[in-house]
Image (cartoon, rainbow, N blue to C red; front, side, top):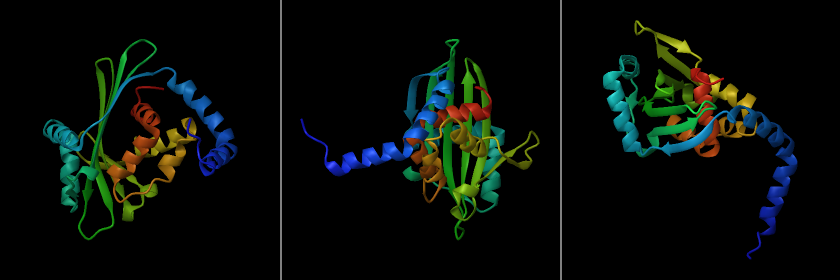
Length: 219
């Protein structure tokens, strides 16, 4: 059997000594919350599939279409490269054996000559056949994701600042997934899609659960 190199083993030991206490607390808190939901299936969509879904939603969701128009009127342009699209679909079963489906689609928007980076996003959480949909967009002033701002529109399509998703999932990570907090605090990128994709790769389960919690369908 091939032995692990000593430097690697040393890193594991150091990681355990440094983060062991935090991990034990994190996993106990996280397990207590996530035990109610059993993962059935998760999908990371291909970028072209995400783009098709978003384009279809823009035609049918008036609020999402309004947000898109607002971004474009501000000079932001939709980005269609692979790195600028993110789509996830996760299915869980709750303690009542009901299907909980969490869908997140996001596309980067950039403004020529500006350091600001934006993203149009759509989150859907359904328990059984009851969906709750939340369209919004994010802006990172001068590319600073820690100062990210979230916007949505009301029933009259008036723009307003919101704290329903971004700030909520960050707080969820701190409260429920302390060890996973690393991936949301220290991830660096040039735009929202790769920034959040890194979070998905590192903390997939917690990312999905935080979205469902923040939309309000799990407690």
